[in-house]
Image (tube, rainbow, N blue to C red; front, top):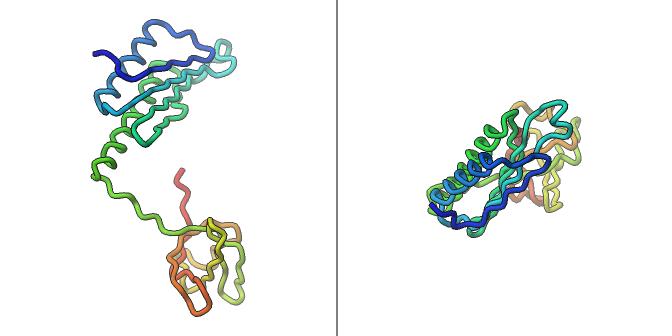
Length: 182
C-alpha cells in the first residue's frame, strides 16, 4: 500500500535504522487504512539524555491531523524502542477510532457539570462560595454538599456543582468534590 498522507519521522539522539523506519511507515499506513481522513503524521523518537551510559526508556510521540482535529499521543515510553513505537501507535489508533465514532455520532458527548474552586468558606455559619472558571461567584449551603460532606471541604478545592437561581443570585443545589482523573 502506498502511504497517501505525509509522514515525518523526527529522531532526537537516536539513529533511525532502516528496520525502525520501515516499522514506523507500516504502522502509519495502518492509520491510513483505519481512517482515510488522516492528512499528516509526525512521529518523534527520543532517547533519554545519557542513554548510552545509563540506558532508560525511549520515548515516542505522535501527532496526526484529521479533518477538524489534531490528535496527539505524548511520550509513550519503554526500554525497547520497538515496543515504545507500538504503544504509541496503539494509543493514537484508539484516539482515531474515538474520533471516527464521534464523527458518526455514535458517541454521546459527555455533559460535564459546571465546576470551580471554593474561594470562601464559613464553617461556623455552614455556607461558602465557589468561583467558576468565568469568574462568577456561586453561593452554596452545607446541605447542598454531597458526601463526604461540608466538613471535608477546603478553600482552593475544586468542586463540581449543579447551579440554580436562588433568591439572592446563583446558588449550587448540589456540590461534589472533583476527583483527580490521573
